[in-house]
Amino acid sequence: MAKRHDVYGTTDLPVLLPAAERLNRQAAAERVLGAPKLRLRAWHGLALAAVIVLWTSFVWAQADGAGNEQQESVISAIWRWLPVLLGGFVFNIAISFLSMGIGTVAGTLLGIMQISQVWPVRGSSWLVTQFFRNAPWLVLLFFCMFLLPFEFTVFGVTIPFPDWIKAVIGLALPVMANVSEIVRGAIQSIPSGQWEAAHSLAFSRWQILSQIILPQCVKRMLPPWMNLYAILTMATVLASVVGVGEVMTLTQRVLAAENRPEFLVPFYGFVMLLFFAYCYPIARTTQKLELRYAVKQ
Amino acid sequence: MPSSSNAAAARHADANWTPDQPIVAIRNVHKSFGDFEVLRGITFDVMKGDVICIIGASGSGKSTLLRCINALVPIDSGSIKVEGQEVHQPNLNTLALRKKVGMVFQQFNLFPHKTALQNIMMAPVQVLKQDKDAVRERARRLLAKVRLEGKEDAYPGELSGGQQQRVAIARSLAMNPDVMLFDEVTSALDPETVNEVLLTIRELAEEGMTCMLVTHEMGFAREVADHMYFTDRGIIVEHGPPQEFFANPKDERTKAFLGQIL
Ligand SMILES: Nc1ncnc2c1ncn2[C@@H]1O[C@H](COP(=O)(O)OP(=O)(O)OP(=O)(O)O)[C@@H](O)[C@H]1O
Ligand SMILES: [Mg+2]
Image 1 (cartoon, chains in turn yellow, brown):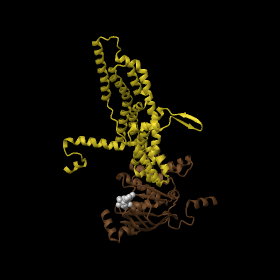
Image 2 (cartoon, rainbow over the protein chains, first blue to last red; image 1 turned 135 degrees about the horizontal axis):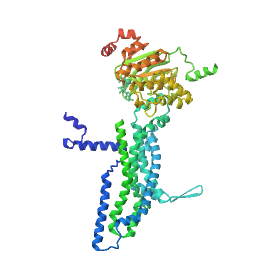
Image 3 (cartoon, each protein chain N blue to C red; image 1 turned 90 degrees about the horizontal axis):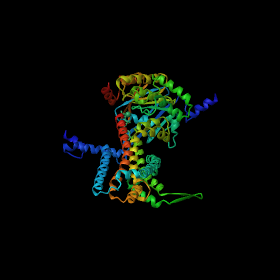
Image 4 (cartoon, rainbow over the protein chains, first blue to last red; image 1 turned 120 degrees about the vertical axis):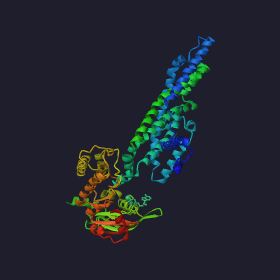
């Protein structure tokens, strides 16, 4: 029956069907996920490494040809700056941990509010979620930088509020909104029979959520939550734009100090490799979990 | 013992109710979903210890009726009283109502992240705040009663449909209900496991539990029911004791339905 193909709706060319189906499924997955899906592949890392190696040998050959033996090689320069770069990278990871922690706690509350029976609560939490989920991350970061004070005074005690803490909050906002959607989606994916059975056993709404629904959601939420974490980790470099001393900022300073334009590509390539090495295992684990749960259901 | 009679009085929201009055009294109940009127004036009584079976075509409102009795679905007009407690009122004490009414569903609806024993223990411990050790003891006895001793630590996913449904029955019984509602509890089961669930229900009925069953198992209904009800498009078309009901149905719609199914 030719009609059946209309279900996919995107093409009537049979050759394109598999691709159309794949794209449809991707789009559906992203809707469920509540966030764009990270697709890190092993070859991304290999390609990066290859670029660095090629560039390095190219620089080497040039240096050789020019007869400037006294100039340092890229590899040894990276090696010399390694403690600085790694220090900066650890700072990125720290920012990602804090933002993820704050965003997860706030997002979980916001997600639960999205299924409230009180419509003002439901409506306002929906609005907040949509606002922060669709705002560009960099814009949110700038807002936090310029709207938050540089210090707080509570009960006569002045608490400093350095830029990096503002960055943590700025990044936690979109995380919160995405977690909110992940939580809402997971709660709504639990069959309504669970609610009915629990209600018939006289559980209160709050007991049902905390004892029966949310524990079942954890498994479903883990893959999209980890995916979000990997995306956040890569987004921490945005903090360099507002002057936080993380790995990108430090790399810029190192390059300025070295004043060797040919170092630009290998140094930034190296930074990308650091992120790849950190995020790729997370992306792989996420994929495996997704597959495992998909098979089980 | 005055203390126990006080407890009994507190258990019944309406102290005037006595066991010789209907345990469930349904009067002219109407319920619509949007424009669609699912229940169009249902009236009947269930006495303590009675087993009543409701049959009827798909979509005739049988599940909706059962759900109204424990306030899972609010009704639009009419009255439902359970042991004298009016279900259709703005500040309904749902806890008091749902302690009295147990319900078992077609899809079992066990909590998949809890073991069989935990499924049974959860509500008495968390809702009724009963002592955990006493509840565990009772839960084990209930599992034995539904012939599932040894399955205490099994998760729902590791049990067959029939076993899951019996855990669901035990879970309901753990609340010590006075009325049990069964909504097509064998419809989602493999034919081989239907009988083990029916046997459990039959034993309950013989012990004197008040049961309201929606079922398509006509043979079973004929054996256990004290009274049969046939619903069609939101009203009770015909009712009577099973012998009479099955032997010579009066209404044309009942005849047609029984003719199809038997
Ligand atoms: N929550 C709801 N919202 C809207 N319509 C509903 C809802 N619940 C039930 N209905 C509709 O009410 C009608 C009666 O449903 P009900 O489940 O009570 O029928 P039933 O007699 O139990 O049928 P079955 O034998 O298929 O279980 C159906 O048409 C159904 O679509
Ligand atoms: Mg039904």
